[in-house]
View 1 (cartoon, rainbow, N blue to C red):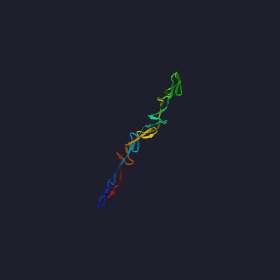
View 2 (tube, one colour):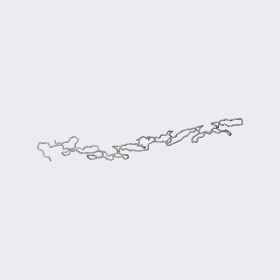
View 3 (spheres, rainbow, N blue to C red):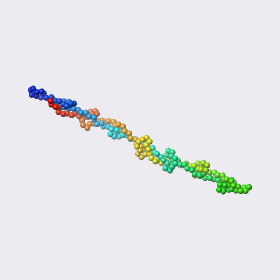
View 4 (cartoon, rainbow, N blue to C red):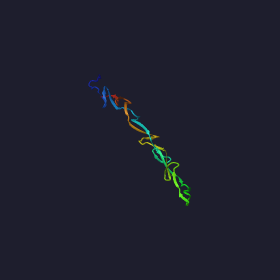
Length: 192
């Protein structure tokens, strides 16, 4: 009990706006957002995001270093050369140059020789020309990522990100309540 002189009013106490009076003390609870802990169920945590990467083989770009026509991973080279001619004469006649000469009952005989063609070095004969086709393996000039991504050597890497999940919260100061931190501040009450 507080004794007061006769004729005086008893002492009262008051608090600033928002504070709660308890005896001669004022208190207020201040709330602030707690700090979340993030995690990733898939990928690597980066800040508040989960980063995932996947790789696939890059697409090879082929070319024919020795010329020719590219088809898939094969180069085809076409060429031609003159066919070998074989000339023949009828019986009794002798080949002289491209003519057949000899003697018959009527005197000297001169006729054209018969000619046949062949491709001794291979190829396909057309008239007096041999046509050849050869193939060899194409070479890789470069690689590319046909589905996007970043090229590294012969591989492509695609990187994507998604929002990380919150596993828990913590407070640097105060008491954790759900997703908030609470701090109780007390000051002396003002006597009136």
